Length: 245
Ligand code: VGL
Ligand code: ZN
Image 1 (cartoon, protein in one colour):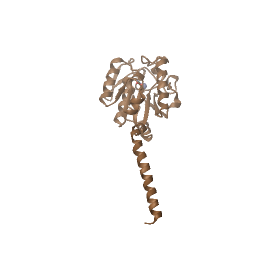
Image 2 (cartoon, helix red, strand yellow):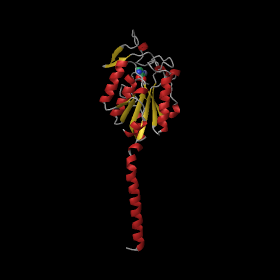
Image 3 (cartoon, protein in one colour):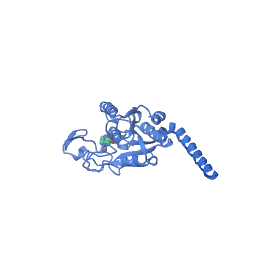
Image 4 (tube, helix red, strand yellow):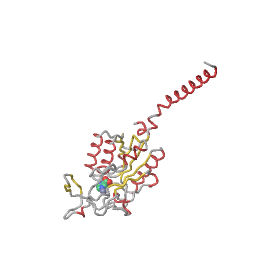
């Protein structure tokens, strides 16, 4: 072996050791470099008391929306990748009681063996109260759902007919493994979205203080159901806890 070859080998080994060591040193941070996604569910005028929504959920005043906004800003500041869901129904949507003869709001009907809750008309495409109330610029994308008049869609991942939205593909495309979910309503769209996220293989955290539910008993049941699916329920948005999960 020539001197030059030896010097080259030594240099190569040096590089290997240098980068190898720095890689090992980097490992305690591996968890922190996992991409974190956030899904802000259906924070729209029609679900809030603030905007006098047609399907206003208790506890959704201006202060609540401001807390959701602040949490979204904090998450964005952490480099987390934010998505929103947006209930976006045509006027002839199956879930509106007005589209069924002799029905009232909150009646239950059976459609193809599924139970459908009949709601007041809400989140009609292109109406003021269908807008997402959180700064839209914070979101990489706003996923619309419930556009097919035949199917309801509580989940941001798929409708009741099984049609998938772009949500799962976008999360995966961005290297996201952990998803934080909060918004409205705990017992419907938050629950369905969080459970579908867990079933799609994401580690899921629901932040309870940033959620509001249609009714206390169904919301309490929803929390238990989500735990059964392996979802972590936190009272508050705690950055350190979420980073280290
Ligand atoms: C929702 C009822 C009907 C929700 C949407 O966002 O939880 N609830 N449509
Ligand atoms: Zn709806």
